[in-house]
Length: 400
Image (tube, rainbow, N blue to C red; front, top):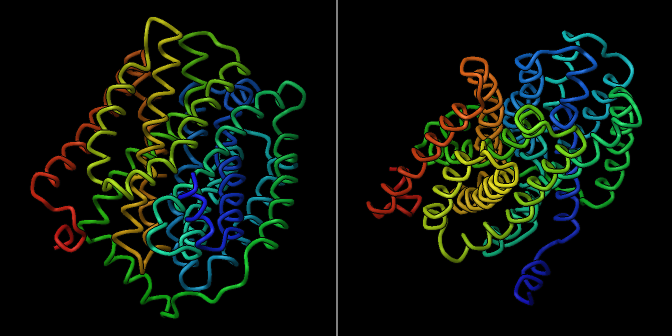
């Protein structure tokens, strides 16, 4: 514990706290539709396929905007970019509060909520640049544990929905974001952008980064770990309600518990990766994810909940490990790399609910979609095994 405290004192802890706050509240906004899926399904009279798209679209919007935010964090500065993201979140939530009525408008509103997913590409660079290299795994894990916002929104939204309609919930969240904006501006000092490159040059550099084998690989790993985490958390209320007939409040509580497991363990993943090596750690984490995911649909409701908790906890641990590798292998491009790799994670989160919902429509069961995701996880594990056996754990060798 004393070692962790020493690490925290080695940098600017208000920046870490501000980054964590930004990500926490943004995660609440980003997964708001997933947390309100059952009330929305009833209010708008939606089918399972329609609600699956509504739940998934914020994740797709976040995937695209993470790359834009990564550029802005490097070229214009992480602090002003982060403030713009919070302001945009507030405006979108006000639209949901006052203007969204039918399913078509709800789809547009859901897509616009993706701006909250861009928080990842600014919160992590703010925390990373406030600390020295030896602290990166722990610090990035702590900052990224802001995905505890998943816990808060899945716990609170169903309870709010029992007392107010979903429009009023959007208004309440707009107030939360407004207060967060003030706190963030106070906590984070003004800094100069780390890059002065021309816009075209930056995007050329982004394309070059995407074409590096390391970036592809980390993006795939993060699509499995982080994409699995947010995607699974987004559909948990629907799965629990449909398979086990759990009501909205209880399903939200289970989703919150799963989100808590994944969020709380993420810094531990980064900390372990700092000391044991990221690839060695992933070697043990990925098969746990695959095994737990295939056991999510179980004859026993208790076993199903336990497996959901194990799966999300393992995914959260893996998230911390992957971003320890991002910080280690791309120290000079942490904003850009966070945006690119983070976007891949968000795309994975977008695809998983669609995959599960589509396979449910074809087969009548959620199991086939979960089995397919487990197969992708096993493929990711295979790439780690190949890399370890070939002694390619250094970024210089892997990127050749």
